[in-house]
Amino acid sequence: MMTYYILIGGIALISWLVSSRLKSKFKQYSKVHLRNGMSGAEIAQKMLDDHGIRDVKVISTAGMLTDHYNPKNKTVNLSEGVYSQRNAAAAAVAAHECGHAVQHAQAYEWLTMRSKLVPVVSVTSGMSTWIVFGGIALMAATGVAGGIGFYIAVAGLAMMGMATLFSFVTLPVEYDASKRALVWLKQKNMVSQQEYAGAEDALKWAARTYLVAALGALASLLYWAFQVFGGRD
Image (cartoon, rainbow, N blue to C red; front, side, top):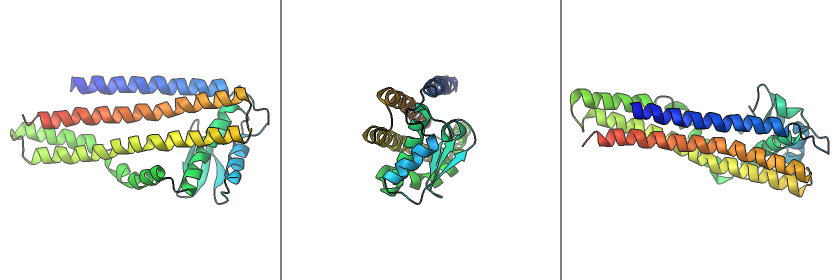
């Protein structure tokens, strides 16, 4: 178990460092004011309009970096630091979230796959580790490597595998949304060269948070898989 705690601790540390760097970048580029004077909400609305999307609303949501696109009610939710602000960071985040709305409108395959996984992962992700651990404990208690404990542990691994798959499916969804955002910002001449550089850098760090999460999920899955299948030897 000590190895697991070290692994989780290392992943948590890296995640914290990347998250802190993202917040730092957001704060830095929040000081780069847009020459066009548009707010994040106005940027979002224009991107939706330019893509012919009329059934998505842009609304404000509480918190910092809580921005997201909700495909169920078709809303682009922008945080307080984005919705009304007029800077490079706000433009980047607003355009990125609208990138998800464009994906939805165009039935982007990775977003469709991710949406299908959401109900499964929301149920299984919280209990998977405990099921694996319980199965391993039962294997140890009974001394039977291939008994019921093993199958319980494998069921937990399958649940954990779904969460890991979800994390990796999220990567192309997020990277593609950022790509769509940056292409639109540049093609429509929405930002200056300096503003574009800030938006691009901010989105790169945002994407890295998802990459760290995916690698962390994979590392945890491999660790527990080794414990389960190694315990049979």
